[in-house]
Image (cartoon, rainbow, N blue to C red; front, side, top):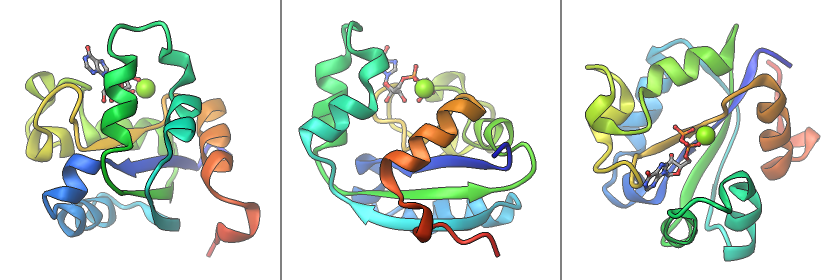
Length: 140
Ligand code: IDP
Ligand code: MG
């Protein structure tokens, strides 16, 4: 499934009413939205979603941030979706993100960085399945 990736519009960006601008950016960059919904992650879900980072010093703050308000999650479709979406969002730290990327435009800090993107095809498949059932994902 190398044509799909998981995007999350994080609580900071949803709270600042950037959802529309970010969805416009997604569409302008040529992604199709295969699935989308609004969720408010539980602590348990955020801990499981970010389990790979559980030994990192920022883990508890990250879980608290991701559960601080609702997120918009989406399965995005495009050729080489993972790489294309990472290029569209920019570096984790917005200070290091290229001009015109979503994080450069809308992120406030390395933690509150507006959006998530899967980092590999393998993780994209897992992350999409974490939030969406197969019948919620449209291929048209
Ligand atoms: P990514 O989102 O660009 O893939 P990761 O290294 O996978 O970055 O980190 C996951 C999330 O954890 C980041 O998007 C950010 O919200 C948070 N994070 C990463 N590094 C730091 C840090 O050094 N301090 C605080 N939060 C961080
Ligand atoms: Mg990551």
